Image 1 (cartoon, helix red, strand yellow):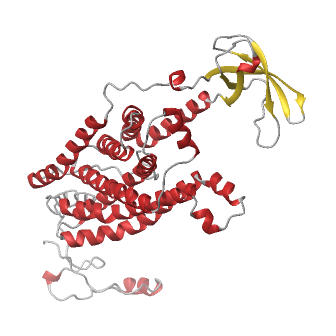
Image 2 (cartoon, helix red, strand yellow):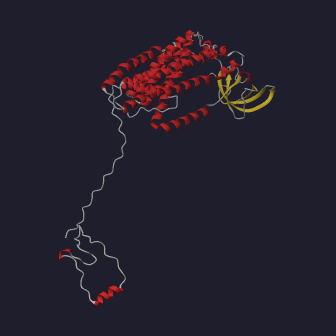
Image 3 (cartoon, one colour):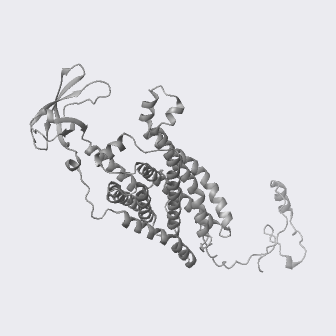
Length: 459
């Protein structure tokens, strides 16, 4: 559900789709959307009332309580826990309940908020209650608030849209997928239709209505269909029944036939859904940006370039899916390994084999999503007239206009040292008397005047 790989791929700055692109997307997407809506209408259990609680034999009722005392006087591996009930038929009364003590057993402290299981026989008797869990509502609320704050701080309006899409995904699961499966509908068909509804809602709400988003939806739906076909084929080929401890308890409680193998495949589809979102949106965005960078690329060139980009992403998302399934099955792996069985026996056991089928089928779907989505994106992008990206070039400041040159002053031509005027003819030394010659000899020697310079100004 939603975006599960930790990447942000906003499909923004979208050029208006041309008429050819809109027509192509309409012919490809509208039939799938109609099929999803028709499938949801046919699979939804209209008029079916699902029995719950005591109506199906579940007589245990949850009761909230607070631990008020802990005493180790119950036995060697037992402690006596005193609790005060805060709701139920004996609200406000205190009772003492024995609880196991030792490795793996829960540890209780004063003030712990716990959940009791009430059998519904005698509200005042301690034998009617059993401590089954801790209350953790507030801790989950605080974590959800922190998650929403982080998404809104980073994504802002798009983060708000992502949170809304996540809530709508849960609405589809709770109000369509779960009631339909409990009513006896095919879990595989319900999962395929439910995944289609989630994809239409999540992608269009998060990334907006555009040609890019429509292409990502197409790639996601094709990949989901491939996962469903491969899962059904190989679960039958490997003789998987889907019967584990939780499924057996569910079938026993319902008392009706339910396709446990289809339930296994439904879990596979839902588990791969969020990672498919990440792959298809990334590939579609990459192809569109390649098209904007070079609008001369052909379909083959766009497909080849987009596939090269998708190879690196493909390896990371496959590893993500494998680690997610391995982490979920880790306690089971540890329990089976303690039985002293060989590795081949462990891997082919029912519980482990179904996890292997889930992982490999989901991984094949993710790998196939890269070329499928890239091909669809290239097919649509080459038919859209996309304006090439214009680089941001800083504006060159205009040079200030030159001021008009001031009128030059007339300069005097001639020798500035001796007052020589060329219009008077060749220069001659003026006659000097004895007094002048004596004064010139007594004066210190002076440097010869520089060469005569003529000014270029007007006379």
